[in-house]
Image 1 (tube, rainbow, N blue to C red):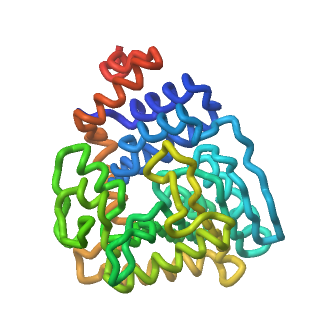
Image 2 (tube, rainbow, N blue to C red):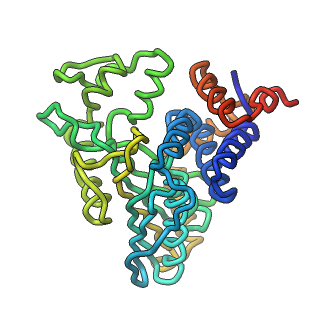
Image 3 (cartoon, rainbow, N blue to C red):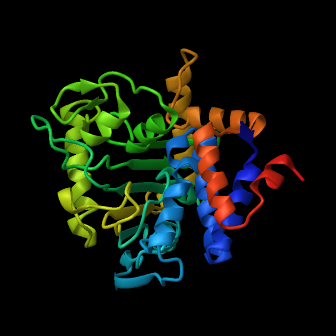
Length: 343
């Protein structure tokens, strides 16, 4: 079945409110989740919502927690999310980064004691909307084996970069692995196979079985290049921000244990380097050059296409996910059927 953006947002806010999540926080979680789904990152959208409910139930997500700033300078900050929703913590982190960038040219914020935050591009978009350049990175619990090994030590370690433009949405949001872990989890939920050359089983053999892949390891994208990038992100989003790294990272996929990963978000004000309008014009001129031969995509084009499509056609929900949502709704005495039927 398919649901509208309004329905998805209402489901999330209503269910989280019934679990005593403050409305403002529930709205951020809902907006970030919907953003993932309409951009085509369904593995990090509503499909992850049952994971958040589990976290609330077992106490690994603490909605009433206060975010604290542990260390700060004019252009940097280290914040402790105290295990609040990852979406809310990272949202606050980027707000701080943007504010500092407006004052000094750059804002760099490290985050620890947070939780899974959906897609990194949601937070880089915050900076784009303020005419800022953004970089967002995070580490995750082990899923990727180093080149030459077969035991997962590195995370899928996403990176998002956003750049302001007058005419285009310029954004890359990707895992440094051949596939995000969430896509494997989604494939397993749907009973689907995964593409070849994505993952290995526990014996180090190639597999198209998502369950075997989740027990084994995901390959880095681009072989040694993806591995090297994931390696560097592991340090920048681990030791640098007072978070765990390597085998000690937990809680990004298994919400029954405390999340120990870290995030690093940056906002850069182009005005501190060049004239803003000239910068955006140059970005657009470069894109025009790239697109001149015709039928060429830039980073962000697919998301724009997906947003248009899913807003018009609705957001697809598979039967297994619908069943999970119905079970959650029943537990919280929420009439999900009435909402979906428009009654």
